[in-house]
Length: 117
Image (cartoon, rainbow, N blue to C red):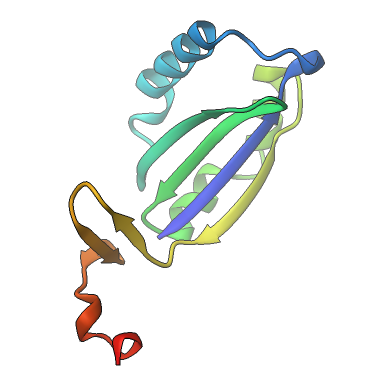
């Protein structure tokens, strides 16, 4: 799995109010991202200097298909600023509410791994 982190600086350094950002994110989630091949999850994020997203893809191939050569230009047209993109290999997930540790989307028992010995 692949995690992609996208950062989009606020245009003119002006952070939108949280209601506006939430409404825009909700619309995008429903109309743009719902059917992206291999996208398992997208979290919309907002900080003092930038907004953006954290994406979880099932494969590098599907992540690269979405973040293709035209992607940054498309984002620049939408937001008026150029985004940055960083890709990471997803190594392990700790899900405290579920009481699980997952590797590759499958639950593992840490007491039964080489690292526990």
